[in-house]
Image (tube, rainbow, N blue to C red):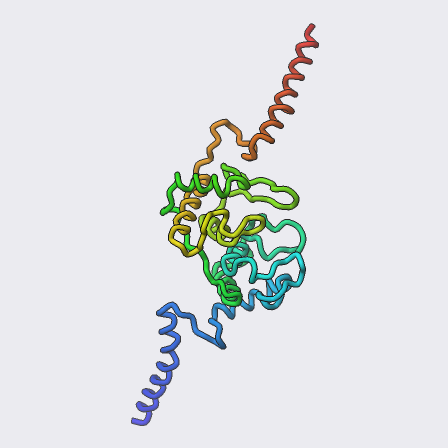
Length: 262
């Protein structure tokens, strides 16, 4: 009888210990430890290891270098997600361009943890929702022409804006990249992406972002190069170079060849 009672008591204690963990996991709520979720604590460790050297120990505080922005001013979790997921951060130097996309240095779980920590720390945990399948291609083309084409080009090729400023190509860009960039406004791009009365949670704004994402997705699926070689899609400058240098050069060579036959 004593052994049975000890066994039941052990089972009861084990059940009490497991109930909080299992209930939290089943409901999708992370365990709280010292006012932070476990995910946020993991994100803090990643931040201190990979980000604090430039952005400072506190995401709200001043950055270590004057050329590095404080994370409270750049757009919260969406800015972190955009920069880290696309491989733009962490950067190897505080000087020089940081706009190029690349392979992410972190796993998906690490990115989510970093988003959660910085978002909670600076008071902006919103990652914008986007669904290109719900967007209208015609409306997206019109909105893109109004808000994006001046810098990124109507064909999404991107361009240099002067100085060290670059509007990157939209080819290879995902719908989430579009939504986060519109919310955050990285580089010379204004927050809201030039869309009038933009709100990241407003239904009208969400629909317009879906429309633009649908057009960008179409650019990636269908390359509109009916004229032949796109020459980088940079417009009349490289095309003029080809016409004058290569085309004129061929005419000169042909004239010289004809002259030698006299």
